[in-house]
Amino acid sequence: MTPTGNKSIFLTLLFVCLALFGIAQPPDTLSSDRYSIEPDREAKLAVSKIVQYTGLSPNFIIVESDIPTAIAYIKDNKRYIGYNPDFILKVRNRSKTDWAAVSVLAHEIGHHLSGHTLKGKRGSPGDELAADKFSGFILQHMGATLEETQAALQAIGHEMDESKHPPKDARLESITNGWNEAEGLTNTVAFEERPAKSKKTRITFTFKCRFFGDDNLYFVDALNRIIWYDNFGNAIVIGKKSPSEVRRYDWVYSYSDEQYFVDFKGNIWAETNYGSAFKVGVFEAIR
Image (cartoon, rainbow, N blue to C red; front, side, top):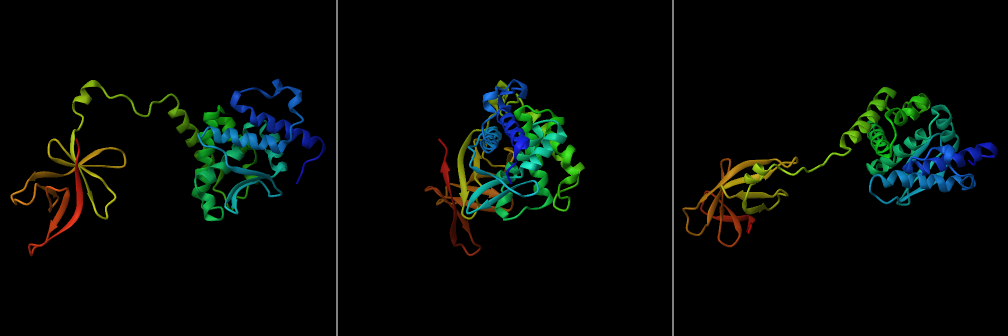
């Protein structure tokens, strides 16, 4: 569907504004020579601006469509974002802010980047809330206030398909969580330098061990402790290294009630009750 007359002019202005949000230039300061640029081009520029704040390169195909609102989908292994110009116009008119249209596009981008469109159809309520959170997160980084970030849902949320979307309150909460999370990360250093005294207690490793069929990596430190790191980077002591009383082995790897025997060639062995042994992993000295 292609807008005509005044509607076409208005959409042109709308997408010009969207494309320039990154430099925080208010609409009334735009030069009139930009008004003749096609809305389709400005929609693509707006999406690229959103994606820019993720650190990725935009690889979406933006298409005008006669769908009720906006949608993210995959066709012929290509990622699309379809939007209805009338819906975008309604969002802008009722919310009285260009950020509302940005949030609609950001929500659909969130579906793509979260892998929801790989399912072949719009997924669960959890998928919708995840896309809402992404929208809130990105718009905060782009400079929108929380109220501007919520504007689209506040203005036309009741007109969205409630059978496919979570309740409005839940969606607003998810958008708020994304916005707050982004604000909390602003000017926050992810990995702060440790205090000098903490450096003195840094763990020194002597070996790293791998077991066949196990994706985890295990370490032996200078205190002969066997250490595994959890998903939060915390060092967990799970066993100990001790001298071997059997001449053919260098040392013993003790974990819970089990013992593994480490030879001088970098192999880890398990022994049966019948005296036979089979290789279960490898180790490497850390120099």
